[in-house]
Image (cartoon, rainbow, N blue to C red; front, side):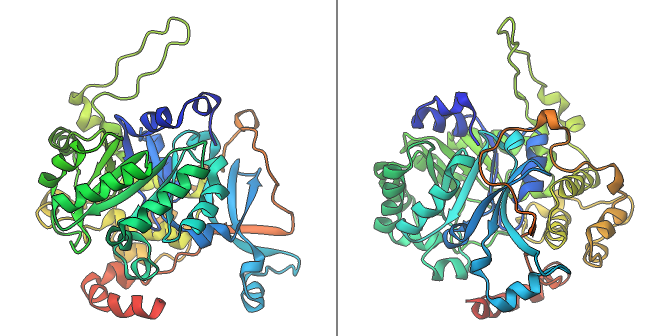
Length: 441
């Protein structure tokens, strides 16, 4: 959803509004769903990205209004499932179906702040997906950096880095047909700086409104330190807003990389999972306009950093409260909590400075043993009875146009399946991953 002020801006002004001097939550598969996005916003993030949603997936959805939660739900159409799948999703009443929610948007909290990321390799499908969500998001981002085999084999993600013409065709078609919101792209570094500059300049010429650069190449493992030194020349070659991403775990890291690269904004992925309250530590926090005098209130200073950064257990408790609030899928919630407790994908040179201490003795094994959201809340001492649902009071609700949820349709969070060995035996899973991905193609 977009405010009247946002709607009144030009596309270029909207890109400036979203992508200049901003601290942004990155698109992360399974993680950047509603609870983490709203938590990041609560902690002072400026902009949040959805997890990558494949074009065909969102095209197979129906937009529904969830008046109970005050959300806009993109619900998988019943017609996209086989009869056998529909029988499995049926409740005790034969007239009800438990259809999965692919994306849940909270207009009250995410208005002018949500960027929807699409996984695509086809301009036509990209346009269809973008048009489906255009009224409810502030911008569209095209994933051009994901190195996962399922993405690359589908011509999506980092496959686009090797096909400049197709990448530009996607941007061009979107820019010609999406007139209300900016179009951005998120990429990785190519084999050398010259190649990367050629690619981003081609995107800029195609009409892209902003570019995010992850400071790693496609082949780089996440445990390899990000290549900060390579960003400066790439950023300086562009006239559109630039966002940089990679290994900013502290306020000092954020300041250093922004200064070193010259980028307009920064984006946090794994550091936001390690401790989402890093967004609270901003030296110059959001200023609020005084509605009468127009004067601006000063923000917190960098000296407040230790007090603004919350303990990890407090962050996990807050995350669980958001998960309850937005009725998130328990399996997906468990995954995110395990990511918050794990350093398995952190750069090797940073692990020693990323302690995982939990005073009540919680471990990844004890989290993996939980099969339900109440079990997770009990483990982390979160009282579910004290957690509100959705936008709490009727006077806070926003007016949302569209069809309300049918009484014969119940919705559940999208299933996100993974093995607990993902966290319990990370090295074993790493060795098995190529075979698992091959089987999923």
